[in-house]
Image (cartoon, rainbow, N blue to C red):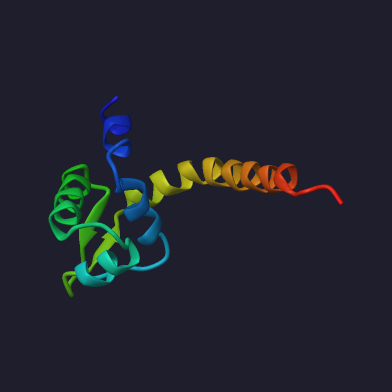
Length: 97
């Protein structure tokens, strides 16, 4: 349940998603996650580091750990399902001609 508690915190999934392809510095990550305050981002990054899902590299950029990459891979089917669900919703929402 600890993982679900962590993933349920606001912005956590967005941070993981933004780090999926490349590392990012604090300010860059904050810009990618528009609307997140610096204090919240800082706290969420500390939470993810404590869980060994995110780490900093030699340039002090944030990146996913091996464990973080495994977690993202496990979440990928959920992302794929959400994409299909969204597309199905768009088809239902289209006005009939």
